[in-house]
Image (cartoon, rainbow, N blue to C red; front, side, top):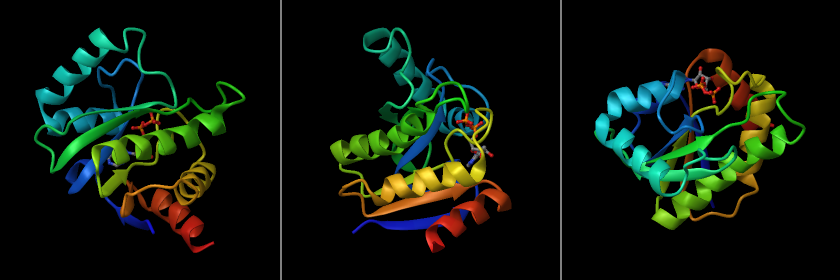
Length: 170
Ligand code: ADP
């Protein structure tokens, strides 16, 4: 059984086996969670991201996919980078957002991660409405078989926290 937990806070302050980054497909960093991960995690993460671009993801990491790197100076073993869909950009957006959670858990299982912390993917710059994103996130994690023991949603503000809390209660 996987425990789903909620905390309000900063993803980059979490201790977990793996922290999931809401990356963009370039893997070269950006704003929001991505910026915070690279700022606090230090240059080792970006160095691995660049190597991944050179070897496997020359065209960028596709939306809905996930890939792991070192966690650098973060209090974790790995960062799992996943690319959320931009809200409204295509009809398969909901499936792609679900895929971010599923693929991140698949990568976490490959690594042997027991605890994984997620931000609310796509709800920042990518514009996804919080309630719908929370529903997709929690339903997908609940319905994905995984050896991960704790999935922790790390919500940056009260509104996001409340949206996820309503989903877990329901
Ligand atoms: P996306 O591009 O996938 O929308 P963002 O990073 O812009 O990603 O935002 C995703 C969510 O993460 C938003 O709800 C935002 O408020 C939140 N967020 C931003 N910084 C952090 C952080 N350091 N820890 C946790 N959540 C964060």
